[in-house]
Every structure is written in C-alpha cells, then in structure tokens.
Length: 267
Length: 275
Image (tube, rainbow over all chains, first blue to last red; front, side, top):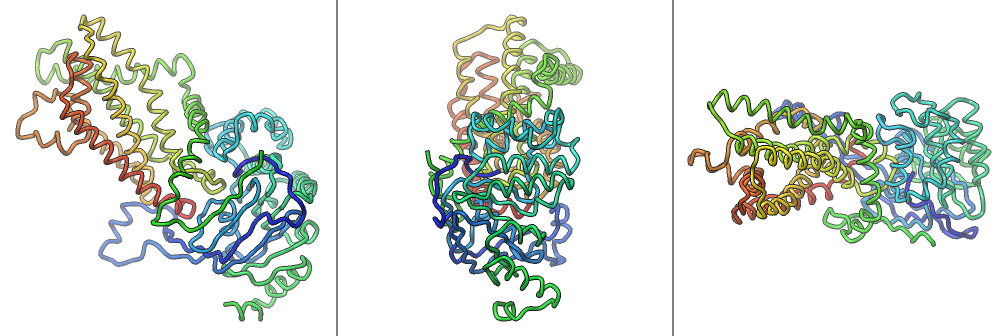
C-alpha cells in the first residue's frame, strides 16, 4: 500500500504516470545477509562484497487514465524495479517520473510490517506509513477484512498466517482503498484458486476511465483478458509496447526462440 | 481534496529534499505513536503485569548491582543506591533505544519494499518505545528517593534538560545503528557487549567524582559520561549540574544526531535493494 488513498476525478487519456529517460543503477550486497564478520574475513582476499546493478536504462513510458497496462518480461528484466520507481520506493538514478494521482501498490511481498503483530495492526501501520489517516483506514477496514475472508484470524499475529492468508490480506488492502493508480506486481499468482478468481474479478471491477492499473504478471492469459496495453521489458529496457495480443505473442515467441531481433537491436 | 503530483528525480548530493522529507515525516507522525502502541501491546506492556515488569526489571538490576557494590566495597548508603538506580534507569533508556533501533529497518523489510515513506520513522519509533518504557521508572525513582528520606530540591528540575539531551543522543544512536545494521546484519549480536562496555565506562556503578584522575579521559570519549553525571547531580544530589558537563553531553548528542542522520538519509534510498 502506498501513497494516499484520496481518489480524485480524472479523465480518460489524462496522463497518470509519466516516465522519462528513467535509469536506475544501484549497488547491492552479493551476500543476502551481509555481516561484519564476513567482511572482516574477506579483507585481504580481495573478494567482492557488492555488485553494481543497472536495473533500468532509458525507460520512457506514459500511462494514461483508463489504461490497464500489463508489464511482462523475464526474471531480472527490471519490472519490479520500474514499479518501485513509480511508487517512489526507489529514487531514480537518472531521468524523471511524474505521478498524477493517488497510488496503491501491491509489490510481491505485500502488506505486513511486523509478523508478531496482528493482521489488524499491520493494516493500520501499513496504511499510516503510506500516509493515510487513521480515519481513512477505519473507513476501509471492514471492507478489507470482509474481502480478505480472514474472519477472526485478522486479530491473530501474522506469523500464524499461511502464505495464502498473507496474500489475501495484502491484496485486500491494496485493492480496497480504490486509488487513482493501482500497481500490482506478481501478486495474483498467490492464494487459492477461489481467491485468485475473486482478485481478478476485483481488478476487472477496478477498471474504469478515471483509474490507471499497472499489472506485472507472468500469467499471459490474465493479461490478455484484463489489459488494454502491454509493455515488454528486457534487461532494463523497453523492447515493445502496444496491443496486448501483439506484444504477448512477440514475447512468447522470444521465450520459445530464446532470442529476438528486437532485443538484438536494443542491447 | 486532490493528491498533488509526485515527482521523483535523482537525489542531489546524496540527500533527499529535506523540506519535503520533513513534511512527509510530520504527516506520518500518527504512525510513530501507533507503532509504539502496537509494539508495547505486543510486548504485553498494556497489561498490569507488563507495566510492573517495566519497573521490576531495572529495580532488580539495580538491586543486584547494589549488592555487588556492597560486597566489593563494603558498607554503603542510601545515596549510593539512589545514584545507581537513577543512572541505571537513564542508561536503560539509551540501551533500549539501541536494542529497538538496531533491527528497526531490517524488521520493516516488507513495508520498505512495498511502501514509500521516510525510513527514519522506524528508528524514531524505537526511541519513542524506549521512552514509554523509561517514563514509569522516573516515578519509581521518586518514590525510592522519598522512602530513603532524600531531600527534594528545586535543582532537581535540571534533570529535564538532561533528559532532552539524552533523548537526542538516543535518537542519533538509534538512527545510526539501524542504518549500520542494514549493511552488517551481525551488529545486533555485538550490541550487548557494546552496551555492557558503556555501562562499565559510565558513572553508574560509581560516581564521577570517585574516578581515578588518570581515567578522566573517559569523561571526554564516552558520550554517556557527562550526561549520566549531570543526571545524578540533579536528581540524586539535588545540585545544579556542571554547565560544562551538560554542554559536553549536548555536543555529543548534536554531533551523533547530525552525523548519524546524514549517514542514514544519504543511504536510505538503497535500503529497498539492500534488504
């Protein structure tokens, strides 16, 4: 969940998100849990502890209100990084992003602040951290709890939740606040079949002229059914953008062939 | 009400725009109080026994140390016990801020990866929690002081500015260590040794005036030394603390806060890719 839940009136084709010459370079630790001990041991050996990642390179993208944009690409293509840049979580290294409207995000790991705290506390804390007021969260809370179908478990510590319960609460939070711009990153693949269908139906409900949806997914069928625009990212660059069937077909052809003429030109 | 357009651009000089950052932090102040309440509730400090434990724990510790001092040094008096209790309680404010602060960023991983917000909110919340835990101990100290027949002087009010300096220092330390822990996750394991060392190097088990002149260097290199000494002067002895000690404590607090905050703010953009 991110940014404010205040919903504004927007018109179709008005720009919701404008991404210009976006570049993202960051340094990250090679070890998933870097320690002082490991660093001290590595001293003198000259082994590298960090690596520089160029996650996005010269990305230009406009998302208009009324659009449902699907984002596809192989693992490491930069899809999640792009979503985090749009959500303001990762500041860009170059370029500029302009977001006109309230944003709600469901980025892979979803809601959840402290597993020792209850689902209820986590929803409130997540909302407050995102800049919502207590009243706004209270206004949405019953709907969130009902949609998540968690029942009494909403007051149990989140460490007792199954991954499906986690996903249900996360999706409910992001999809219930009805933001202007909703970003969902590979979150539809979690939860049981029934909830997956319910989530998809909610996304379809959320499609409207005054809202922009960005869906990152590997579920091509879902994207073909839901989106009216698809962008394909590869190695941090936009390879193709356009009508969903055309772009997805090209992407699937690339996956089958393992190589694409378009990529050869771009890389 | 409409949401103003958000513009995200590269940071200049490694720092976010401070005015915007502060505004964003201020607008989320409710988070800090809610987080503190939730955390205290989770640790059962909303119950009678939980609150009792807040008081009993440092009291037991001061009792243990007092017995140790009596055994090691022989006879002792009420003032020594008061000094031990007052300084130990304040020491625990800093120690709890460090313990809570060290994992505040790494524990907030899911939220950091999913939501844009000023990350400094997390170590600030840890200090607020430590403060909530500290406040009841002040009343316990005042009761002990009354029971032991120690006089209540107007100079005791000097403890208020000393407390503010301590909070400032605790905040700076929590911000710094939370950031270091992102890069070296085993810092939390070293923390008990660090706090224990500072406990022995600070005027808690002894009074500053008893210190061997050769060890006076501790007053300069240990940021807690002048603060705890001033605290004891005001609360235990009912005297005005030495202005030089208070200024020294303030200088440490300001220095640690600003250096730590600069370090944190210039690094926080990386947290989402480091966690």
